[in-house]
Length: 200
Image (cartoon, rainbow, N blue to C red; front, side):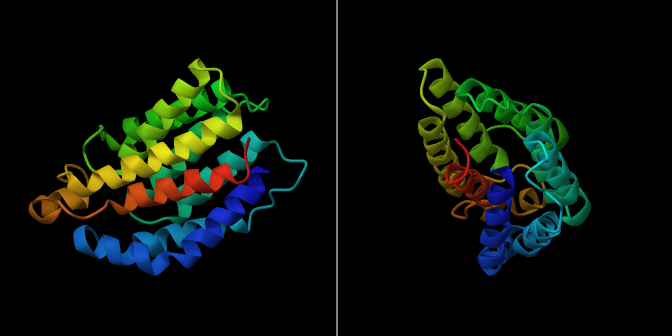
């Protein structure tokens, strides 16, 4: 299940590499799509067989992203998968998914120092984590909770359009950052939307 999710992530990034690079050209180095595509292509070569625990698969993918994605994105997206894997609940309960994603958020924030409103992947990720926690408190089934969390991530992504960039290379172009969606938030929303089709 996790392997299928990560394989679809690889295909999604391969299909959207130009779109993400074009977004990144506005505020960054113009290689975000290329880097994410390369990282997930490397993850795709891993032996994530049916006997491997999901937590181990997620950690292996996290390491592949750290090692193969350039710039700040590799450590940040890699840390997300490493922390989610380390806290993965094999029962796939909504509360367990919420805890794992929250730990992923904490890892990303500890590494990148971004907060809500800084116009980064954290804006998409925090919205997803908060949605999952609300779903867990409401006793919602994992499939419903994941759908809502993906919608939350997409809303967080869209909200970055009106934000002023405060972190990373984008902050160097803060004066022209309003009106542009953050490519990292786009990628995180894509990852979480893809998860809906395979997990829960």
